[in-house]
Image (cartoon, rainbow over all chains, first blue to last red; front, side, top):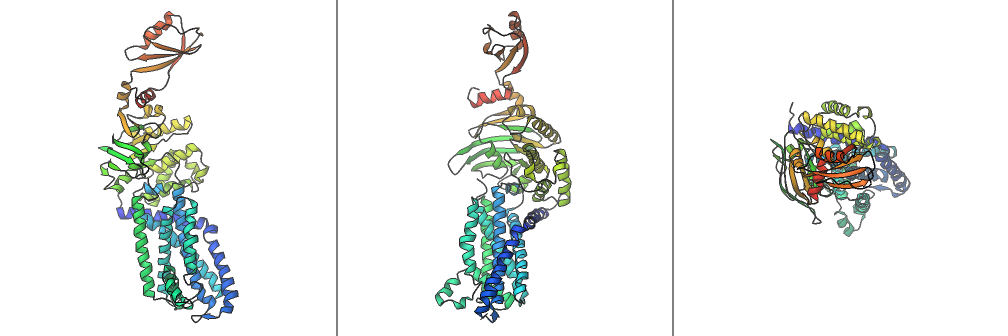
Length: 260
Length: 304
């Protein structure tokens, strides 16, 4: 019995997803628990202890204001970390060759790993949301915006993790981007404050940070307030996905970091 | 039909090393062929290009007439690869490794599980199916890679030094298995350092050295080109000096061992006749190296 090429590719994609999600659940103590603990500390220290002295921001308590940003921060770091560690691990252990010798097209390999990253990002996001509900009340004002922005943002950072893993030659290379680029951009991306609080010059500089748009679009979905236009946020997210996806395909097609 | 056709294949690495200098190599469907060569000859590079793990510089590679430049996915579907180095996830369950590989080839999960059972049983790994792969012995890891390479039932199986580092018992059981699947119709190409392996298994042999194929053809025909063989004779009584054996080049290894070169125009009966005349009793005799190894060494060292 001959099954269609599309079905074969779909089975290949499904296999990567099952493998990736299985990995996330198997090592849950490394993949799901740490972000939950970190975010709990953020809620206690910034939201409860310091936040109670800050007063209202955008018409909400400080705790409620930072909650969407913290959820988004955990989604971003988890989706990125999942793909970069899994794909680099496969490269380092050479079992990425199992995929490279198979007839599975490159776009399916990219989609499979991205799906794994998105699943972990969302699982962590749900966990952090549940924790947030112990500290504050959250109403989803725009459910479609909330869900679409969180999923699309997880896609962006999963693709980023994949590209990082492709270029990485040693384990140190896997931590450079999260430490020196991702964390600063996330902290400066309006998680803890509104950019309207910044001097005008810094407001303009802050707008060059794509994470600002993701955090604010997500906050708009939950609280209904944002420092930036939602249309611009969607445009930036979609543009990032198209750009990063195309670049990932280019890298895999040419075997950069994978084939000699 | 050719299972594999390689024409003028060139590979130059970024550091300038020319690993392949325009090789031509063909394997017919159903054949059992060997690619022999010393370390660094270009065997693994050639296999890497066929299986898409290495980018070629120029030349053409066709697998069952599918050009890897234009129909790579179809070409890949036809190939099963057993690489030289262990390349499965050492923290994964044995059955999962094989089932997942089937999935990458588009085989539905239920069928993948059936085939995993079939090949793990054939390779005596079924009892270990729930173990983590890093707990396997070296020989078992090799067998796992064979099961993984067969799970999508490829038409062409490529094995890069499959028996390197495994004990003789495992090696022989692997040979029997490979012979069996070749009889069932799978074309097999292997690279090996054990020339005895190639002589025993392969109908065709190609010898590669410094990026060029220096000899290829049927194993039997290549061996016929060998002009001399060296026999090692074990003697019953110790000898004080090298006995005069007219026409034969003789070397005394120790008191009770002689090495005698016999060329094609001579015969072994005559040699034994001369030994008998001098009351030298031979208790056993063997080839110094296997015949293919002798040919290989002569070709690679340019003595052919």
